[in-house]
Each structure stands twice: as structure tokens, then as C-alpha cells.
Image (cartoon, rainbow, N blue to C red; front, side, top):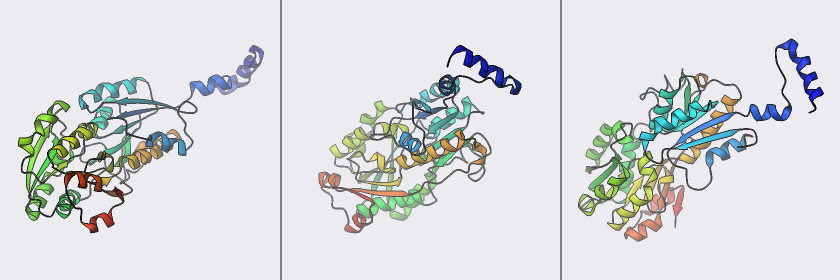
Length: 328
């Protein structure tokens, strides 16, 4: 655009109080920015970017995605949340309760899309699922009543002789699933005649000491509670368990990492793509307060026959038939 054409454009728009910019400058200046605060990048394809792309949003072309990851260290969340707020992003996507809490404390005005959050109402992120009320909405991984009990039942069904189960949990995260479902777990264990043993982590440095031969001796299985720390180090956790011939059971199928025996839970990939739908609506003018929080679309059952062979276990055929995915 020549200087004279630019001057004419300014003159023509003075009456409306709006100053036109050259098309190329306008598009660059007004690219919406999306902040993303996660735990660690999901292995394989990027479901969030794929979800946005399916809706017409392409990073670098008509949207900018600013990513930050705690890498399993939830203490970094407040600093990273503040960085995103400082970038004046248009919307922030936050995965897992510690990250949502950090963003909630960092801003009350920027729209926030959460996912991988078990109890957004109880945690004070939204007023209700139907009417969030504030600047936060998104996808809950709220485990329905009886889900944790079903997880223990699944362990018992897979290995009928199960009597002692270790529950591996990040004790440094007060928003973990095991704490939220402690009563349900205890009641289910009593009904199934299972003795639960707490295996607590507080950092990655605790993995070897917590999951040593002594603590795993006599356990029939380890139930790994989903968390930024256990997801980040899922491979190492499964490796140690397999080394001691103890099968691991997990929630989201993305935790399998080729070594866990059975997974049952909502998919993190699916939730991430659902989050992209919310971002699309907000960038087009919707308010977070008006967008109801959604439940997971589906729960997936993954059976790992490869791990079963390594552990010398036989998976009941009825379980294999019901599985959504079977790892051979």
C-alpha cells in the first residue's frame, strides 16, 4: 500500500472513529493468541492443535499458540500462568487442577478452558457444570460415582486372586483423585476383600525409593493415580513395576506407555480436542460463563496382552472382548 492510499484510508475512516490499518499490518496485529498451560506434551500427534485445525485455526496463520509446560513439577505452575497472563493472551487452556488453580489465581478476566479436572465445582473453579458463572469453563474428567470402585473391580476381574493393591499417588498434589475418592476406594476395597497400601510420591526423586523391592513385595497390583507427576514419569513407573513382576493399572489410556497391564478412563487426547472446541467458541465471541462444562465423551478400556505375556499373566477372554483397544 502506497503512502497516499494509506492516507486516504485514514481520512475515510476518521468519521467513524476507527483508523484503518494496512491489511498485512492489521492481520499481524490482530492474530488471536491462545495460552496453553500443560503438564508435559502428549506423545505423538498434538490433539489440541489438531482440534483447532479442524475448526479452521492454524498456528502462525490465523492464531498464535503460546505453550508452557510444568514438566511434572506443579510448583512451576504459578510462574508459568503469570507468564501467559503477561502475554495478554485472549484465552488460556489449562490441563489438570494445579494448572487451573494457578491460572485462576493469576487472572479473573481472561477466559480459561480447563480439562483433565475431576471435580471443578468442588475445587471452586466453576459455580456449576451447567452455569460456570465466572471466567472458567471446559471439560471435566469428573469421575462418576462408582468409577474408582469399578477400577478396583477391574483389577480383581483381571487377576481374580488379587488381595493386596498398592495405590501410587502424588501426595504433593492435594487435588489428586485418590484423595477425592478416598471413601469410595476404601469401601470398594472392603467389599472386594482387597487390602490397599499407599505408595506416596512427592517428586520424581521418590520413584525409585517408593517403588522398591520391599514396598512392592507381596502386592498383586499397583493402581497408578493419574497426576502430572505420574504421567510425566509413567514409563519409569511401569518399568520398575514390571522389573518386580507387579502389574500396573492406570486410568487414561495415554498412561499405558506400552507397559501398563490395563487402562480404563477418559482419554486425554479426546479431552484436549474438546478443549479446542471451547477455544473456537470463545475466540468467536462466546463468554466462558455461558458455556456449560462438558463431561468426557467416552471411557476407553485398553488391555495390554504384551505386558501380560511379560508378566506371565493370562487375561480373561471376556475382558479382551470388551476392550476398546488391545495391545498385542
